[in-house]
Amino acid sequence: MKRKPTNWKLPPEIEARLGEGTYGRQRAIFESGHLLLILHAPPAAGTIERETVLFLRKPEGGLLCNGFEGGEHKLRKLVADYRSQWEECDKEYDVADSAEDLFRLLEKVAPLNRSSTNLANALQAARDFVKQDRFLIGMRDEGYEVSRAFDLLLADAKLKLDYRMAKNAEAQAVRTQEMARAQHKLNIMAAITFPLMALATLLGMNITHGLESRTPLLFAAVLGVGFAVGFLVKRWVTR
Image (cartoon, rainbow, N blue to C red; front, top):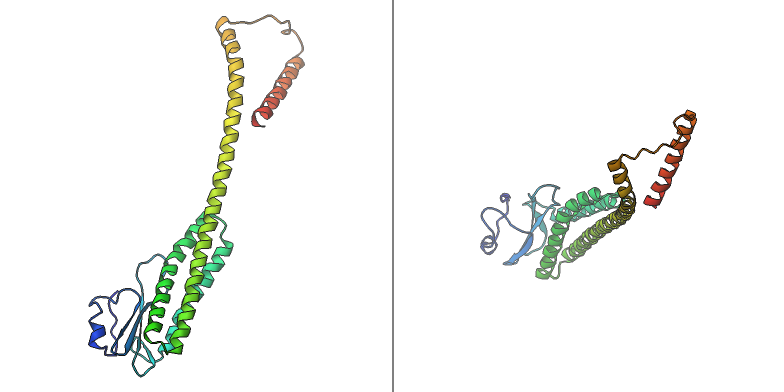
């Protein structure tokens, strides 16, 4: 992202540490009593672009944001925006039941987790440069809490997804085992009946049984017995 124009003048020592095209990663730069905080707004889902938010603390104190007064308010709002994003993701985690929901949540949480961690590290570095600034100490602590919240949420989402994948894999293994057992029973039946069927077909064995002149109800009875035997065999195979 290209550098934003600001109405402040940075010391040459800080300018020498900045690139001409972009401000780069989130970090704190301290030179000649000036503290420059380069932070990023919460990243939007599905984009690699990052909105840079600049804070400058002059030696006499006070904080500017992007060249204007009210830097303290802007920094509080920036950290609050990260917290709001976490609260929204946490609600999505509570209602995520499918693997697709969890994948979608992970795609959203992962960049927020990285960005919030870098934010916390930059605020920690700023606090180390200006140890007596109570405001920066408070912002450092809040940034750490938000970063840890995203760490825990990301870990919980991964664990929940792993559990669902393991549960599905276990259920699939049970179904595969049941199918293999049923196939084994069918193979046993085929081994018993196949030679008889082959011989009967080969020799054309039509034995006179004397039932040709009987009532058709006898055929229906034999058909019913056949269905009953078929259901018993099915129950044995699928048991």
